[in-house]
Figure (spheres, helix red, strand yellow):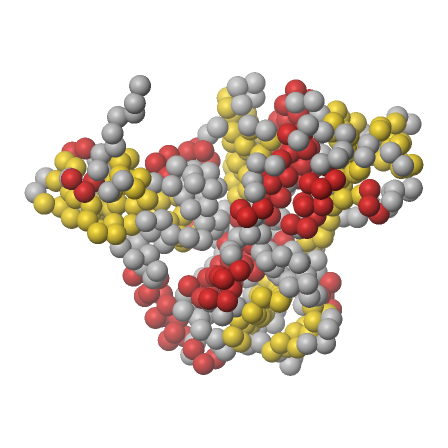
Length: 522
């Protein structure tokens, strides 16, 4: 049976068809669109997120913005502009006209420029910092934070010199995909780069690849790479990310051990998997188990070896960890928990308990460490990361840090935290860029990440390093649940599966609680 034709907003929609604060799905001239009503204001915007094509009709309207249910990107209703990562590209936007009791979508609006509120903020910023004061920006790091910062600088009107220095051999890529769809074989290589090569040339971004920074001279405002080339800066962003924890496994040849951090790492694992029968994944973290699921999708026998007794219990609690373990076991993954690799002899992998696994290679996912050596050498304050203030600025004026290395004062938990979440890194890059331009914007976003295991996706908002109660609602068996992590009665984080709207509402509730606390500190 054919689906009912979509309402074309060009032909007009009765105002009673859309409740105040609600939306209607339809089209504009054949293009999927949403018609949204907020009081006397009407908006017509594209129906799908520009990040992973999330259905925005299932998202959340917050003020004059629309949030994506998949990964919490945020768009302006008035212009379609992507306001918060992980989306960078705008959604379509049409002018809406009301005639009597009918509203019509008219011509498509340009999404090239920020909306009026952004323009007002930019004007205010210009009055605080002269454009001539910022002529050279250097970004050290080629991950999500670095790319987001470069993109934000150009979008906010910065026209000076802009250099990105990366040790990787490829431009910034969609790192979450490296352990998910790309590794599973369901995402082609051309999907992985966050921006095409022409993006950097068109925006006059000097992208310096395969280059490690050897020194940062804050006093002289310059950065030097190992080749001896130097780059001067007025503002600097350190976004050096994290390095995988490397294990010394007796007997293992270098070509038997793989790590998963870069695009090159993921490609190397894919190449090995093509002729492999069995693999040992060391580590039962999110990355380790995502890699396990992806390699199972390729038909490879997967053994997970990890020291913990229950996977991810520290993050999600034991019941959820047991459920995730059972999910992987139902797909054929074999677990060796409370164990570690003792020795490798050819294809023979001997565990500490004496058991033996026959494996073609090993993937090590035993965690990461923040890459802070460069910042420490430069004399910046280090405390399990690079210490920054609420504006992501270090103790050195004009020097910012973002992403996996940044430890910032989190207004939601009331603690100074460092997290290794992709969306957090991108949003920090955006905020750091705006503060280079003098905006004075605090980083107060609620941390968010997602993890994919077969057909299960877990969303996690907030941050709970420790909790005294984990309240489960719903059913693990039905893959439909939420877990609220509380300490002293306060919700610090919420994990959900198949409850995208709830995840968005939890994020909004945490934001509102922080704003209320800021207005009423006593």
